[in-house]
Structures are given as structure tokens and as C-alpha cells.
Amino acid sequence: MSEELIVQVKQLIIDSLRIEGMSPDDIDTDAPLFVEGLGLDSIDALQLVVAMEKDFGVIVPDAETGSVVFQSVRSIAQYIADNRK
Amino acid sequence: MLCFMFPGQPLSRGTEPADDAEYQTIRKLALDHTGLDIHDFSWNGEPSSESVALQVYGTAMSLYRRRVLSREGNRPQMIAEHSMGIYAALAAGGSIADSDALELTFRIGGCMARMAETGDYALGCMVGLTLEPLLAIAENNGVFLANHNTSRHFLLSGERFGIESAVAEALQSGAFSAKVFPCDAPLHTPLMEASAECLREIVSGYRYAQPVVPLLNHIDQDFLAASEVQDFLLRELLLPVYWEKSYQALRSAGGTKLIEVGVGDSLKKYNRWIDSEAARS
Image (tube, rainbow over all chains, first blue to last red; front, side, top):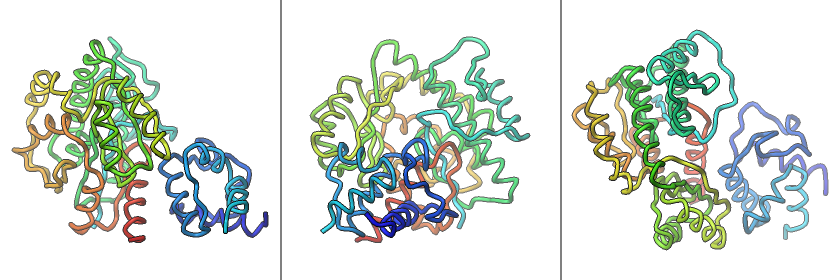
């Protein structure tokens, strides 16, 4: 998994969630995304699912998978690296 | 055109501390008119339920944020509301006083809390399914659509066992997220008819002036007139909230800058979803 993909995932989070005043450098790669960290919720998660499918062609099929994928930026990037066509 | 959007009851206490003059004014107003100290959720006198505390807190924080925005020079040209956000919205529109908004929230919340003495109710927060399967799940489990927030974000309301089974069925059907939340009463459903007499008595005890800022209602997306407010306050407790339509109506009416005035940012996130879906189609 490349550092470039990590940065792309951070930019995807910023763009799809319309987070103002934040750059990829401001997001900790390994910090939890939900409740702590960026404080995301299930509304944000679904927005990220759609963005991942659009930008990377990767599908998060269900809540169980989502709970693993959305633990951190690194876990999202890993899932994309493992599943993109 | 600047619009203020007033959210409904928060599901938990906010994490943003406030301690300025406007906050202290609203804190005292809430204490005097409801008995709740919004700072630590303690009650002066007989305590009410956690749901009532959250309802009063939600209204109080909306009133506080509106005062701060006003101090900063923000003057809305339209107002919208979601669920119990109606009380703070009416105050922002000049239809009732801030103290009446708090008192109405507390008294209506108290009336709903009494439903919990004889029933066991819950809410089901559903993310990911579309309306058609969601409505089928609601029907299968004897519960009701309470909020239609976007094409993929819904709230069901009803008896707890029905909500729990609906949540399980939603997850089996591919919902991205489905969770049960506690509540005192089956808000936004026909089951609220059981408390209609108590609720009617409460809402009839206030005078409602014509909103000086157009106030869009969440049921049929019309602007409320003074003569309609009392009826709406009762009707809205028995019918679903249609936020997606309300947001689209705000946009159609010329709304360009929308500010969420209250705890959290759920409405902003729903709007983001609606916008992104429109961009995709």
C-alpha cells in the first residue's frame, strides 16, 4: 500500500465530507475515524462508501465490512488496495 | 439567501462547552421555565426523564446559538425546522418568546414521558436502505416511518419489540447501519393519538404571532401562518418529518446559505447527501 494512496484517501474524506479548513496532513493515518478522531458517524460512513465506489470502484457491501474498513485511514487504504480492480 | 435550520432533539449531550453571557441567559431561562440546569442536566424540583432533558437541552442550545448568530450579524430570511426544532424555530421567527419555546418543549416532553409509564417505545435509525424496502420492513414489524431525512436515511418509531425486530430485518436486508435508540413516546406516529388530549391542551395555552421570518414546516413544506401554528404543533407529533422535501423546498425558495442552529450537524450532513445525490444523477 503506497503513501500516495494514503493521501488520496485523506483527500477523499475531506472532499466527500466537505470538511472545511483541513488538509491531508491534518489527518492522522492511524487514528480512529468514528466517535474519536474525526468524530464521524453512520451518515458520514455511507457518504464515504459512495465516494469509494465512485473514485476507486471499491464496494463496501455491508455494515459488518464497514466496521472493519472504517477504523482508520490506513484500514480504508488497505481495503482499497486489496479490492480495487 | 440566508436560512436558519433548527434540528430536532439531540440523541446525546453536546460536547462543545459554552460559558458566555448568552449561554448563561439561556441557562437561567431554561432553569426558570423548565427546572432543568442544561449545564449539568440536574433538575430543580421533580426530575423528568432523560429524553425530556435532551429535548429541553436541544431547544435551549438552539436558542443560544441563534442569539450568538444574531450578535454576529446573521439575519435569516427563511427558517426551517426538523421535528422538535419547531419550538426554537417559532421563537426565532418571533412567533413565541424564548421562554415559551422552552416551556412548550418541557410540557410536551412531559406529556410524552407519561406514555412511557404504560408503553415501551424506541426509535430505529436506519441508514442505507431505500424507501420502498424500508416501508416494507416497517409494515412487517408494526412500526412507523417517523423521519424521511434523505433517500437513504430514515427513522422508524414505535413499540420497542417492533423496532428491535425491524432493526434486525434491516441489517439482514443490507442496511449499512441500523440502531435502536431509547425514547419516551412513539413520536411522529399515529400512536401519539393516545396523548392527543394532553398535547392539545398544552398547545392551546399559548398565543402565536405571525412569524416575521417565513417558517417552512416539515410536513407539507408550506410557510406557517399564525393561525396554523397551534394545529401544526399537534399534527407534527403524529406525522412523519419530511426533511429531504424541506431542504429541496428551501433551495427552490432561494436558500443559498444554510446554517444549522442547534446541537450537532445532522441536517448539514443530510443536505450534503441530498446535494451529492443530485450531482450524481
